Image (cartoon, rainbow, N blue to C red; front, side, top):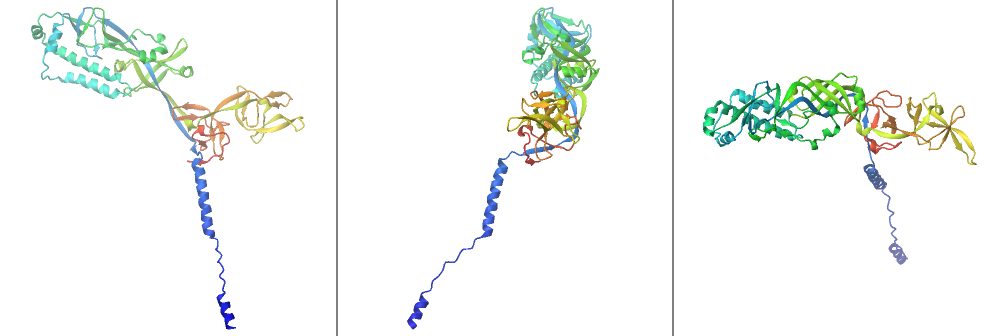
Length: 469
């Protein structure tokens, strides 16, 4: 009996303990996998940046580049020789004023070049001439107009030579002894006006002669006249601008020309010096091209060295709903005659369309449509093409029929107030490179505080919107 008990004690069986499921770990793994999947979908999905429509205004200012026209005459040389200018460019000269000298032999010019410059002093008046040139250049400098640097260089060079020649004339007797026999002629002005030392072939151009080809500056040539250079008989020696009356001619579109016909004067800002003036308006129709001529009676001397001038036209200020240009899109719609569209009391629209049954029979069915615009001139509705197809037949109340075929385009934006892209027609009042002012409270358009898609190119019709501010 004792043995049996021992055997029973030794025959003990051990069962494997069942492992319990860790619910917490499983839930954590599921949440982690879900978060990763959602994150990947979110990163790969295109998000729509929204823009809140606000009331605003834009100044209807437009920058144009125009051709400057003045009453100019070219003066030709009558005696061959070396020219030494004594009148400062931009200076007003009167009849009988000394303009330049002619050294026929060139000996005086050689003597001037051989003189040591030494140490010289300038009077306050002479320093004032340099200050005026420098200040005008600094205030009107535009890095994109590199030719202005050369014009400034020539202007300073002529000023320096003019001052040197003036001092030489004050001591002509000693200079003549040093240079030997000198044949020097003094040339006086025969006109009154502002003197300049350049020409370009536009001196005789009248406003009615302007063409668009003249605005191609690649074909433009400017000839600079420098002191102490040899000139032949009949060569252009200088130019006189006879009066303060001058004008700018600008190419414009015919639509703008029609709007400006009612304006007598326009406020103009000159970008070169930021000064403003009022220009008298004239519209020129030169062949197929339309130009705006702005005439002035002052400030001509400020631009005496300019043929092309940048101006900003201040045409007023437009107010309305301000939206980004990037939000504007163009979409096509079917054009449906108003006689075949029924407007319901709850601002919904229906058409009576021919449909086919399973057995091929033809019946009439009322179809609800969304109207995006009504053209009062054409008496047609712009309706969505999602429920219509070319060739569909619509019925009128008098049993007449209309075949769906014609399409028209509308300019608009995508409204995303309801979480999907809904096209809304807009009327643009004014637009620049960044923003547009559109008409507010239009029947089919926007309202203030509406949300629209900032980038219209990334949106498709009825797209569900994942928004980001």
